[in-house]
Length: 199
Image (cartoon, rainbow, N blue to C red; front, side, top):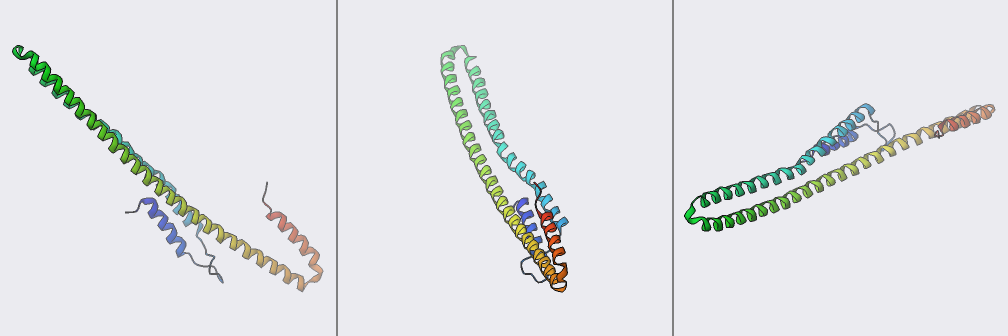
């Protein structure tokens, strides 16, 4: 089952695929900026939710360890109760001490084994969740980068097309009114200066 982030990325890809092509172009598309912004905003909103979900999985390690400690305490308490019952009988006091010591050692050994298993399981669980989160975020990064590159290419082609139209218009005006060539050259210089990025 795909995550909510993957589903949102699929929606963005479907949206881009559904956009109409520009006239006389097989690569440039017309994008509804508000709708695309809405899809991206929803993606940003879902990302922390997914991360919190996997953080809760990692935090289950503490619950596993706490359960192991509780079981260990129960075993020790049972051993202590049994010890008290044994030593309450004066006639078998020495035997009671020996048996109690053996029970306590066994309980401690079992408690340590439970805690050790819990630590191993919790670490494996955490590593699995961390790997899944890294894979998911890596896929998200790749998909977002591809979308950005696609949009950058679209807008670059659009800019180049408009620049070509402007050059054609200028050439046509020059051919029609040669005396305006100096004025057109000045207008072109002013437009080129206006297109320069600000420092």
